[in-house]
Every structure is written in structure tokens, then in C-alpha cells.
Image 1 (cartoon, rainbow over the protein chains, first blue to last red):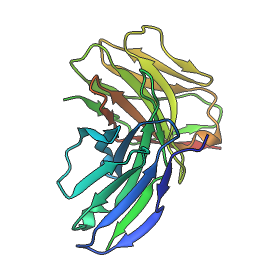
Image 2 (spheres, rainbow over the protein chains, first blue to last red):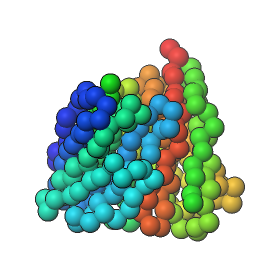
Image 3 (cartoon, one colour):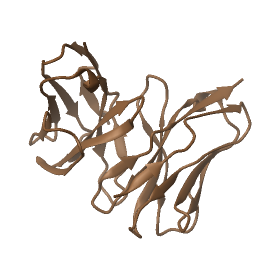
Image 4 (tube, rainbow over the protein chains, first blue to last red):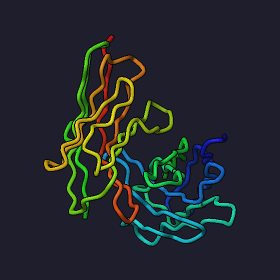
Length: 113
Length: 113
């Protein structure tokens, strides 16, 4: 079974630009969640999508948005990039069942200059 | 709101020795899941072990075991017979009833040969 795939793996942007990151979950997983990982803050929850609907949202500004398509693939978008948005963005698909184990992708490392 | 605290930013242990990573959490819920995730350097995060709050028995996975103290809201991870491959960031995580997963800030574990 293929794992969670995130693209691109690395990208460099400048302040004020926008970026779109993509995540393909494990086949059969309908829930996708996104996290921002920085050295100082650890992993912070961005949002979760289930069957194309945002089910949960973290405490991030409106510049951070996401969506999920009918094939469960998800994208997240960050507009008007700031230096502080430099981070590893992790996508995880959630196993069905009660425990809700997360299966992570390798992440997209964003550097904002 | 739930919180997860890992009080040890870094730890070191001699190869073949035993190490315990601490995690405390705060919640008013009675039913939830707790997880330990491992993030090796430049590799994706994987699940180490999970614990259902309603189970009194501590979870065990090979060399990894937890000490779950529900009343104290403590969930520590014990790694026995430490191996070089155990070197990683370890994250404690809490899954709430509304399916939000909250991570601690992580503990970086070094294995000394």
C-alpha cells in the first residue's frame, strides 16, 4: 500500500508570495490533517478534512486555507507569506477505526526569504 | 482546552540502557487516546505506541512500553535496550473526543554508542 505523498518536498518563496502544498493520503483513508512543525513550537494543528469538509481547524490566521477533493487528495494554501511561515508542513491521513492513528507524509519544507 | 507537555527537550542514553520519556496532559474528558510518535532525522513520523484511556493495562510494543497514570494525567514512554536506531524526536500526542490531535513539543533522544 502506498504511503502518504506530499509535494513538493522543498520549496523557497519570498515574502508576500503564496504557496500551495499537496497531499495524497493512503488509499481508502478519507481524513487528512495538516500540521506545521517548527523547532520552537513543535507540531501545531492546522486543519482536518473528512470527505471534502473541514472538520476541525487550529488557531492559524485566515492566510492558511485548505481543501479536499473527492478523491481525498488535499491541498493547503498559504497566502501573503511571512518569514515566520518557514516550517515543515506535515500531512497525515487518518486510519479508519476508533483509534484514529495518523500516517504521516515526509513533509514539505517551506523556506520564506 | 487540552494541553500536552513534554518537559524534557533533550535526553541522552547509553546504547543498551533503558530510558524514560515524560509526558503529561491536561483534559476534562474521560475517554481519549494517547500516542507516542517517533520522527527520525529527515524521515517521516511513525507511530510507536498507543493507549486507550479506558484500558488500565499499560500498552507494550516490543522494547517500547508506557506507564499510563490516568489520575495523574501522565503518559511516559520507556525504551528498553536502547539501540542507535532509536535516536529521534519523540512526540507525545492526545486525541480528543472531537478528533483533534494535540502534540507535545517533543523530546530529542540521543543514543550514545
